Length: 353
Image (cartoon, rainbow, N blue to C red; front, side):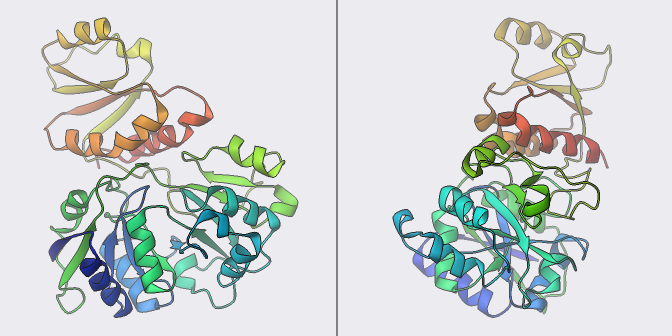
């Protein structure tokens, strides 16, 4: 399959919108990761996404929507309610509060689906995931398209998510498909993603009985959501919804990845294998590790937002460098780190396959 990377200008946006209306997938930038987008009301287009990614048919995708106004002050509860009601029924007031506070932005809300929402989007469940992205190019595409876009990450299922256009090309250029299905995948280059990990997912579909439930952590934390709503965070009592990023093995590099606590990291194994240690240790400790001939050291900042921005790009780059193992220092506890810790743990589970 051919990959065509387009600059993020008016002509390219018009071209990809034309492709979307014709039922073809395109890759677009968002503030979280690049998405493989298709018309959310076209079942054939959605099935093409699943085919390209190798994604299981029962794994739901998130619908991306444009905000109802041009500026945040215009985004009233009434406007959000009208927009959400196209996709969801029985929209709770808490969803409107969250939309007003965090949209456009990296938050996905799970709501009871409206009757016309396609099963291809929901994996056959009675709920739908909705998000309004903040990336300016994504918003221009959504506004010009005039509808919702199904847009899971633009990668092969279970692999590292792409945070720039070149990553999308790496993911799909080896894919061989029928040219009648998709002769060329258009990729809009919107630069590096500002957030770098997928959106927080909060389930509001059973808020009256369970409260809000975090299904996938991200840079918007449980505390921020609870403080805004004035509600404690709930937990699912069995029967958890299937959702994007919910599998134990996900976001995975090909190289085996292990997570070690700081004490273990400072007692490296005696081995002739070529290892890379990814750590936020201080300089003297890094120098000591670097003296071991078979160990390379890559330092990351001890800042959750900074790590989220580069995590996938770092793992993708190191994955190409013939290391036997990538050994990552365990991230600190705390809600600010929940998102990147979640991605790292799933990456470790799925790595080395």
